[in-house]
Length: 356
Image 1 (cartoon, rainbow, N blue to C red):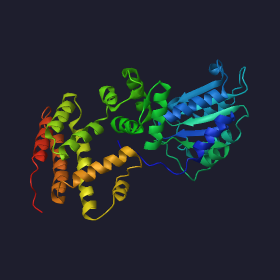
Image 2: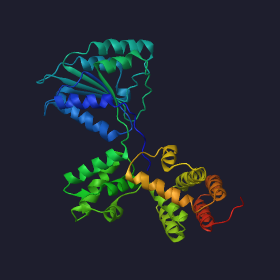
Image 3: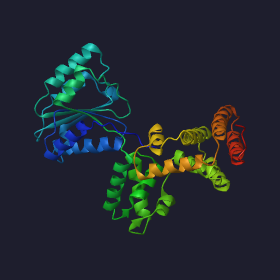
Image 4: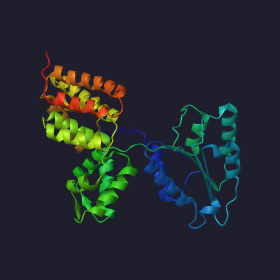
């Protein structure tokens, strides 16, 4: 639901794009990061740039996890191309930086002497890399190619991409509704790509509406719970109760529901603190790492507006009750954890007065 801020340094990504556009890929790359959709996309583009169509089976050498070793890398990079000028070697989830001093020295020797016809790519998929920024191995990768961190995209980039994807499907969408889709379904592009396909197939209109999104999109639990707690803060108990009933009917984890509720009321509490302290909306957004963009701006507005309706002691009380309910849910007998959530919702909806 929240967008993570991107690092200002995306030079490796920009250089990769230039290499691929020019058709001159470098000999060595490291691909890692949370955004698997982009990582897989650029790995595909790298394959297209290096390998002639129809000859991939002869010139593409891959290994994953335990299949991959320094011996395998040494053999794979030395394989001569067949009916092609180049080969591509892809090692996925190989612990590149955890090979010990002798192993790293051996890797440096192998990678320093890559044949002219070979492009080597280390890809981190299921494993999070422990990258040593001072290592000679990383310095070599950067010298010969690049270490590309595929980060989650911010709202502006995602909404632009969503608009382009709908255009390819013969549809259009307002950037605000594109932001709503990200809020509802999360900021990972693989998930969003699936949702875009469903929505484009569903709607008979040329322009996608928010109603189309709500009709077929599969929302993330945190987005649904945010709607529930937002309805509760707006004193719309019927809507909040209906959302909770649907969540429990769909067997969503009460612990997960309470986790998101707790975050919402912590955000509400800090919003009340910031209002009382004369802080600005921008300062509040920075506190919660809310990136720029229309929908995140709207979310901040709703939280601050909700905070104006409650006293600071009540907000503090709501945070404490969520924490207590979390402990109660974790110790409740199987099947009774939903009752704890329902009781909490009723209690908070009552608008109980709390002494200052």
